[in-house]
Length: 235
Ligand SMILES: Nc1ncnc2c1ncn2[C@@H]1O[C@H](COP(=O)(O)OP(=O)(O)OP(=O)(O)O)[C@@H](O)[C@H]1O
Ligand SMILES: [Mg+2]
Image 1 (tube, rainbow, N blue to C red):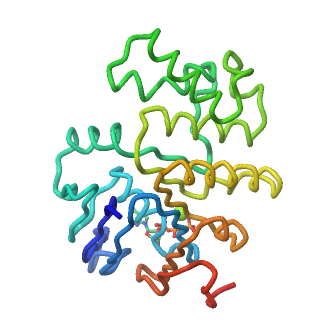
Image 2 (cartoon, protein in one colour):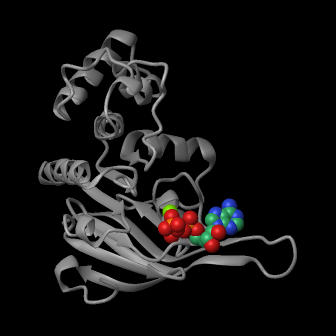
């Protein structure tokens, strides 16, 4: 299986007003093959979002190497990173991050604007994606006219619309009730079955069980990396 994500000796630290820089990620090493479904867990403040933002090219590491599909991404400039984000990665956030004054169709079209599609082609592709996540009958609605679970589906459709190989999700069920969370996790499982590589942060062991592999981080260090089913740590 081809490696889609490779992280080698990744460090991230933030400069402090006084004293030594604050070290958040410390010598992280792992690779993720195409088609894997990985959950990242760990205590609050352990560095999960910092890691996800780095994987998503929203942030850059202080040192170490990050490769996507064999291509070295760490060290790229902002324009190059923007290109990688728009072609290779779909990002899903806890708070959905939808534009409330735009229709679902417009929301899902946004990545296509940056990719240079005309309006008609944007709407055509966005509609297909909304149908794919079960919202084909709601395309003209606004985000405040649908439920939280449906809003997260819209965000997932938006993440998928450029056909990225990688889907990254930082606590995608953090704002949802249990039943809706399960529906969203089933959707991620379907996308994984279609071949998407998925990396997802969660605080909930029950949610992590929808993944196959678990990476557990404490204080910026990987403490477990293996099958979800064999994790005996912090359950
Ligand atoms: N821009 C920043 N400047 C300084 N420190 C930061 C910055 N961003 C994050 N941190 C610190 O880095 C550490 C890790 O933060 P991060 O958001 O990655 O944790 P997390 O594991 O996602 O936590 P949570 O489970 O609460 O979401 C925290 O101590 C945080 O305060
Ligand atoms: Mg976080």
